Length: 138
Image (cartoon, rainbow, N blue to C red; front, side, top):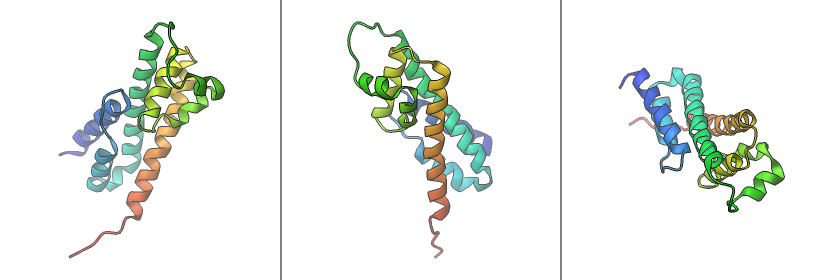
């Protein structure tokens, strides 16, 4: 697979993983970083962009929900505001936080900023861990 195709696959898996659909983009990031180690920063940015856009899709879905019933994690978002979206990368909780932030009609650009920071940090830690992983030669 070419580098461009790999980065497109990374973007797609990152976007889908951040929506309410199941999936993990970490495995795809791992594969891209192993195949194209010189593209580390590009891969981190592509994964962050895709994952943040996916989180904003969940945010938008929350915005569209009628405010007739209380959603999970609304109290957490109300208490901490958009900085709570630094945890948008966490499995299950992150989706609920993004949905709740949209439901509360929080500032969309602040939400996107905090999501992006948290998601980039997670991918960056994965990339650092991958660089530290010893390789075993036969």
